[in-house]
Amino acid sequence: MVEIFIGIISESYILLMRMSVYLLFGYFFAGVVHIFLTPGTIARHLGGRSISSVLKASLFGIPLPLCSCGVIPAALSLRKEGAGKGAVLSFLISTPTTGIDSIFATYALLGGVFVIYRVCASFIVAFFIGIIANIVIQDTIIPQKEKKKECKVCSNGECATEKHSLLENIKGVFTYAFGTLLRDTGWWILIGILIGGAIAFFLPKEFIHTYLGTGWQAILIMLLIGMPMYVCASGSIPIAAALMLKGLNPGAAFAFLMAGPATNTVTMTVVWRHLGKMALVVYLSSIIICSFLLGLLFDFIWQLLGGFSITTLVHHEQMFPAWLEGGAAVLLLILIFMNIVLKYKKKK
Image 1 (tube, rainbow, N blue to C red):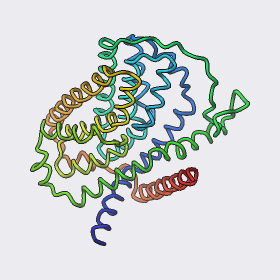
Image 2 (tube, one colour):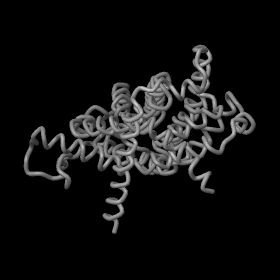
Image 3 (spheres, rainbow, N blue to C red):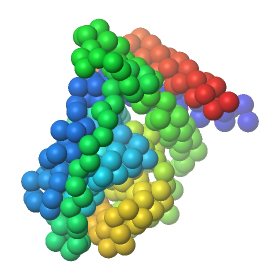
């Protein structure tokens, strides 16, 4: 048992070291986006059934650092402020499947090719679903309501001043990035890393070919596995990386990374309740079809590239010295556990 425990922790720590520098930078950038991006401005651009509203929703969602459940209140808020159903569905796709933190983490473990394809594919799927929704779903424009503006810098959401100093804004960036956001997603990242470590330690390479197959069969199976799971975009990356090292084709890994964060039981329930049954049908069917076809396309592109093995894809050239990766891993662990303790104390 001790050897098994040490083996899993060792494999997990390797994954953590690879991701930590990128995650810390990603969280910081996410804090900058949160403090300096005005939600009201976004909402004003997403109303109606136009192509431009869907396009903007798909683009706005890509850098936003919201997880699978964190995107739900944001999307509902946009809907209440006048965003169309097509734009809301686009936002629900592009936001949890990418995010600044997830983009950096994807590069850390899977390399630049995977990053470019994942971001482009997320945009394509989000835009496609939004357009289809605008065509087939009846929508009533919800008039925007005046509501009190909440301050994102002050911890209580309210303040007496219209403007904050640069120092206060910088403090707000760190408070959100390494407080609120890390508290919401850090636990799931740790779970994903531990699962990835366990897969790397236990799973023999023959398992993938024997039980999952290759090509379209593996893509379909990973879609079915990923859809009901609650897994954030960053937390799913070490799982996909570990499976690829055991022989999973890149297209199947992509399908898992696409469907896992975008679909879970909570999101599906909310879409049904607030946007209607037809919206849920469009949402799920489009994700399944697009993820499957884009997975096949990624495998085809990967074969065209030809000069890279799966191991090369996952373990690309190390960008940072070992001492920096190790220090970042320790710092990230400290921050995550500090936030878990604070969250537990608040519940009590």
